[in-house]
Image (cartoon, rainbow, N blue to C red; front, top):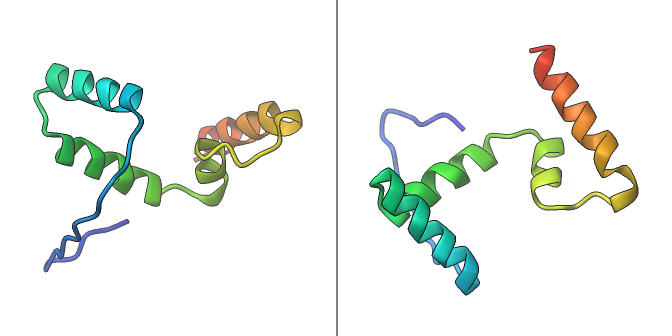
Length: 80
């Protein structure tokens, strides 16, 4: 997802389980980042991924083919 010269930002609300919030807090403390900055970077990265990677991250594939999907993603990345 490329940013244009006139970058517009959107504010969104995110709901997390307590364990995820705790993990995010630890990450941000370790890296010296704000939660907004960390979440923005992760979401921008995610939106820029192809459908196969997005599906894997969202656990959209049935367990019986997850290993094959992971192999396909790695092979595709290696050929870039």
